[in-house]
Image (cartoon, rainbow, N blue to C red; front, side):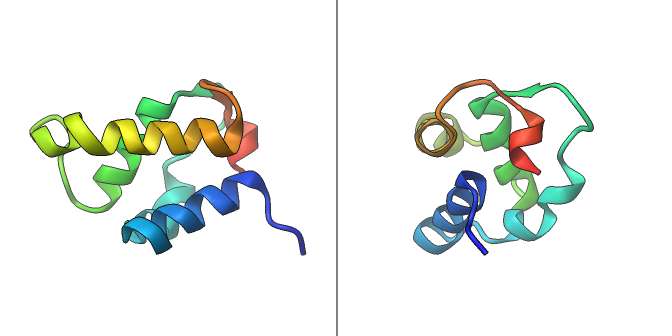
Length: 86
């Protein structure tokens, strides 16, 4: 079975950066329809790991930019339709 760009994105986030809880909890985060931005995606990762992005300067400075860049790298656009994430 071929991996989707989204599956490659989740794999890099887990393997390279150690944010693996998100990959297990992701299905419950995706709305039924609409658009998702790279910033929203980054916040979902942080929340799934048990951290609060609104109170973390590290998240605001480093991780949001990193995860948003990966989102754009693998999915090509920002925002994307949530269908791409399923």
